[in-house]
Amino acid sequence: MRSRSSAMGVAILLGGCTLSVHGLQPGLLATPPNSRRATPLALQLSDAPIVLAPIALEAPPGPDPYKLVHDDLAHIKASIKKLLKSKSGETSALSSNGVLTMAAREFMDRKGKSFRPMVVLLIGSATHPDFTTGNLHSKLAVISEMIHTASLIHADVLEDHETDTSQGTLVHQEVTLEVGNKVCILAGDFLLAKAAVELSMLENSAVTEIVAQGLESICEGGMMSYRNTEGEVSVAELTLDDHCAAISRQVAALIANSCQCAAILSGHERDSTVASACRLYGESLGMARELIKEADEIDVALRKCRRNSKKLRSILPPFVRAPILIASESHPEVRSLLHAGRPAKDAAELLERSGAVRATRELASRHAQDAADALMVLPNSATRDALMVLCHKVVTSSPLK
Image (cartoon, rainbow, N blue to C red; front, side):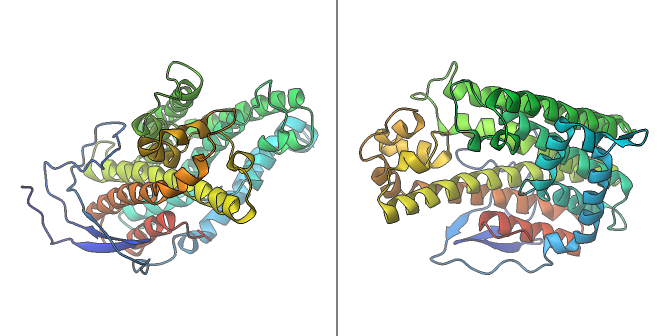
């Protein structure tokens, strides 16, 4: 039996789950059920049991994570506008070039654009000897968000057979499919080029390598997602592990790498316990956030379907989501929701009856617990408390600002 230490025991309450955060024990690695670790980690953590409570409980004590770095985020937002308006002579490249205008709009108008910069700044402060951040942390925050936005723009290139441009980017809603796709590709490339320039200015080879690996992971995750639905792996063979592995590469890896780099910029070695803990925090938080997003999408779709008696297909595009895969384990008919054709007659009812949305939230809670556990190696501070609060906000789908 694994021994546990309660010297650093803390309890965080996530949604309907009471999650007990235990202290660290050398030689123990926490691996959540039904999930994979993308890379080996130097940090060894103990498992943390989940005890389901009947109702949602209060958030852990600590400052609001967004408010704690609000001023820094405002400065970063202004810096981004300035960065994208790279002038040539007296003419603004942004105002004179439709591609750059589209890139800026996608970057500035997209919801959730503060999440990654916020996490980078919080980790940077929590790992700095003086609990502060500097210009390098701000640059890293901008870089991580530019890479993420570029990946979203590229992902929103529509297939030739797709005609619903509302599913694409802002530019797709205003121009033709062909023009929209060209602008998407060029705008995404522009953001990546800007991110590369900014990355070189950090003058830190370890950070450059790790951020580049995060970009590589996004590409690998995108290819994995494609193979899972269109390529080598058929929809009939797709498993929850396959899907979680794709999420880990496509979404969580960039957050993980950015958190590790934030600790490096605060003075820690890339393979130190602190930097590894920050990497684990980012990876686990990213997984939790994506799983909660998928659970929320299915939950909202089922509610609409129940209230308006609509067919689930009309309000739920056939994208892969964890609740569908979980439900299909006991109700194979639900897997028909992943096909572009007509789903099984009782697919919506079976999906709701399976309890897969709740199961997905519980899986997300396990990942959030891993993130909370990882924070225990960091020195006690208001910023660390805010990172703990962020775990709660992610799992309970609470607004970040």
